[in-house]
Image (cartoon, rainbow, N blue to C red; front, side, top):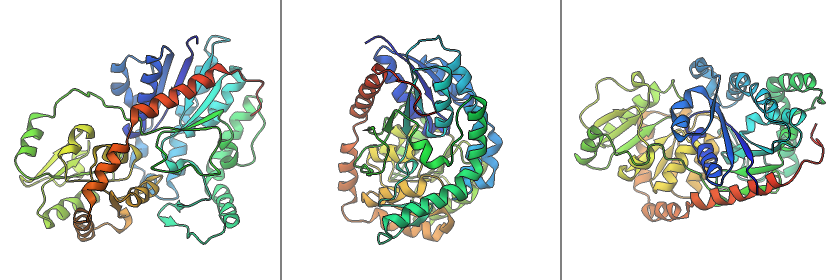
Length: 425
């Protein structure tokens, strides 16, 4: 088939970026033209790949907003912070040559703008790309809302009413005015509520996680193609820094602690991590680009690093303790590394619950974190019978190449079809 122009749009941290990069590079390898739109600060990751990169505006002040990591208010912070970036999508697509076959590969928060692209570039196809199971609304188990698990005995009808309430209480007041203002300005009909409408926007939905991590639910959007974790390895051939190698060779496998590259509010977490490692007489590595969050005077058994590719580091780790971002979770699953998830907000609680259900880790909500609890939970995790066998078995199930090939084939099929009118507007 003739080459197609794939416009890849994502937001978020490095863990959100890398799976989209893996897909974009695979599409380019199949002979397609690929444009990559992402926050400007990710340029150093994207530009070396040779992909045409458009940097989107990002207000890094949002990283200091305490509500960013709140279980219910976090969505509003993320939504408001991403609107200037998402506003760039429609003009970008509008400027493409008329008649060019184009597929938008879009982060879920870009779907309102992706739908508007149908008005400016007839025939554009839209593929929604879901990074984590919690990005997809369902009434089926396991059902977590932030840190709260909905009991299995709650009827499906009650769960549907609950989700409608969540949408009207927490989502629509934040997002609906913006969405409808943009739609009216482009001559599109306003929508009544965001949650139900946005799931119907894409022509195809892709999951960047496998069915063994989260089985397909009956109420997920269709058509749906299941992928694996499409992990991207920046500087894949680079060795570990000499100082880090020396530390790893100087003693037992360390605990590795991180709370996400975008978290500027993790000082309490790293204090608890340092104290917990001392309680357990364990060596430790602390990963964060923000050195001031880590206690200043670390003993020789502990080391701070601003960034280390987890693919290189995790084979040397006794366990990974982290926030539960889907990219970090996937790296630990691929490496066969036990993990303790300390979730704050967004999809992190659900990811932690799934890690625990697989028997390869545990979860301790950040709201309950202190050094004593962290030490006890880590000690219990590492002493769990059969842990090594379970982590190895899960690692063997990670097939990122096969998942990428499957998704690229589905995207080729989508590009081969023509839009028969704008049925979504």
